[in-house]
Image (cartoon, rainbow, N blue to C red; front, side):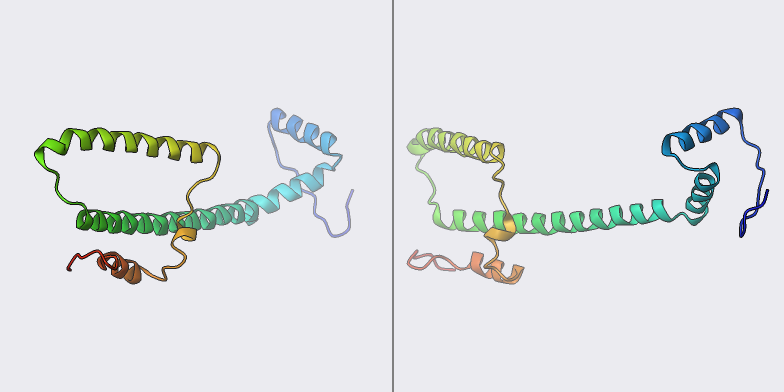
Length: 155
């Protein structure tokens, strides 16, 4: 029997593959010819898998680039904080060291608790929103190098 515009082929397959094909066709309500033709087009055209793979790779590239950008922002943020901290924190007297360490531990524990609560509540830190007013890394570095007005610190 011949169908207009189609050529009949007779490949040999294992009985298990034949049963899988019959079961699939019955379940989907499709003819064996249409299922085999679609499978061959996908196999030789390699369209579905390659398109899906390229989309995933593009998404991963965007995620990696965003992560790289945020890591750069965090690095600059920590470096700027440390510059300001060291410029404005006087050295301790030997007798004040124990009290300062206890106070620092208490404040650190409060900070960790606060961060844990924010993360638990789904309110994470968005660096881009915080640093939106800073146009580039040069401006951030310049802002970090300047002492606050009225600080009395010479640079």
